[in-house]
Amino acid sequence: MRYETWEPVYRQILADFGYDRTGDERARDALAALVDPFDHRRLAHLEGATVAVCGGADTLADEVAAARRADAVVAASVAADTLREARVDVDLMVTDLDKNPDTARFLTTEEVPVAVHAHGDNVDAVRRRVPGFAQAFVLPTVQCAPAGPTENFGGFTDGDRAAFIADAFGAADLVFPGWDFDDPSVSAEKRRKLRWAERLLYWLEQRRGDSFGLLDGRRAALDMSAFP
Image (cartoon, rainbow, N blue to C red):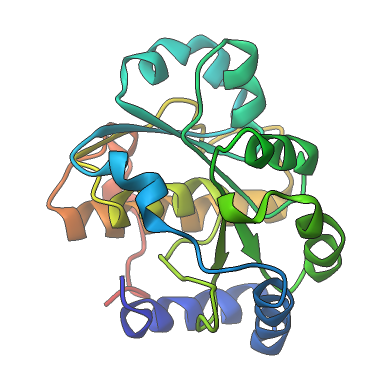
């Protein structure tokens, strides 16, 4: 996705949450100073593949079989831990370093790519954690305009961003084990983020001419006015 396509949606997210674009840009610059450009060939096997985009909901433990059946697995944040415990290989972890940065670091040392996301609330974590990663396996992502080695594939939460990355690398089919848009255990802010994740996935679905099963029964209620 070109940034020009993403930027109007990004503006709406900033307005909805009261985020400061300059904070995102500061985080971008901090990440850019620590990493090299990512070699996209490390994820070339996603092209034409059925990719399981695994969310971090508790339901993932009961849906691991769907990840096993996929050609490749992209794990959002703590989903990587659940999958590793179930002995399912992860092809890419997507994280903003807020929950399990040690898992992310370990995966890079095992030559598993990790999409490390920088935004206004995690500058300190980026500066503290990223130097300990195996740099060749860090895919640096941002939600503002990319600069230097950073990239913007679209997406807001770790989960929906994982889907946008899989799409950008040419995934033929996306499946979604471990997702729960109605998780009652999350905070009010997280619920708002999940509403955005829903809408972003619907947008991605439309852009792909696809149909994601996790959106069945939910599409009609989604406010898509922020999307081009």
